[in-house]
Image 1 (cartoon, helix red, strand yellow):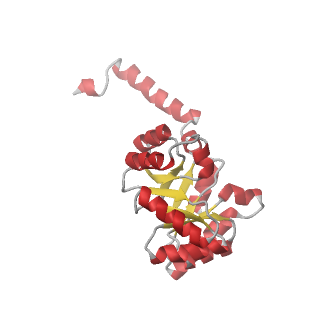
Image 2 (cartoon, rainbow, N blue to C red):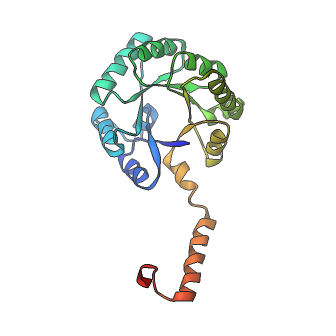
Image 3 (cartoon, helix red, strand yellow):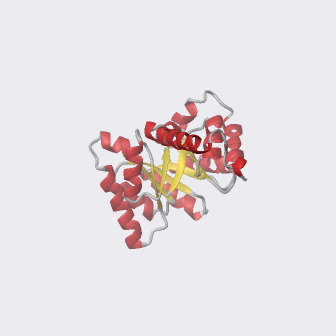
Amino acid sequence: MKYLIDTANLEMIKKCNDLLPIAGVTSNPSIIKKEGKIDFFAHLNKIRQIIGIDKTLHVQILAEDSSNILKEAHVILENIDKNVFIKVPTTLQGLKAMKLLKKENVGVTATAIYTKTQGFMAMEAGADYIAPYFNRMENLDIDAADTIAVFADMIAAYGYQTKILAASFKNIAQVNTALKCGAQTITVAPDVLMAAFAVPSIKKAVDDFAADWKQTFGDVSICDLK
């Protein structure tokens, strides 16, 4: 399992990178919008500096036709680094662009996936990651869990190198379901991930341990006992 965070907020990225075993960062125009009118490439380069070259950075293109998708991809790679995964919507033109990008050995993340056929075609196009939109699929009465499970089955059966990067979550239960169904990687908003650690019972367990220790040893820490 690998966890990516879906944000462009530098302070939150620093916090998550420090506290959590995250594997990278994803972004898109809707996420960027929350940060205001930033210096786009300077900002993304700061994200790379925070997470390092060993973690994955996924950046969305805007173009809709294959030729301009390639142009935007090249600009992104030239202005950040060659290790960026280019996020391409899984449309007909997007699939064409994916095939061309993979001929150049560019990392590709196929996004906006709602259907099994989209995922299958992205696998065939050579996408490194496919990103099914879990919550959005459920909102359309599409069985997101089944779709992810089928993707996992096809990857195993036919030996695709593609990984499932599940996205679009409203709660941690959906995240865990996606992982249980076979998603190797998920990208999730930091607040959804952090909420999993805000369960009152966790704090109570920690407080109980501290209280029991104090009753036994008083105001002495473990380090004081050496």
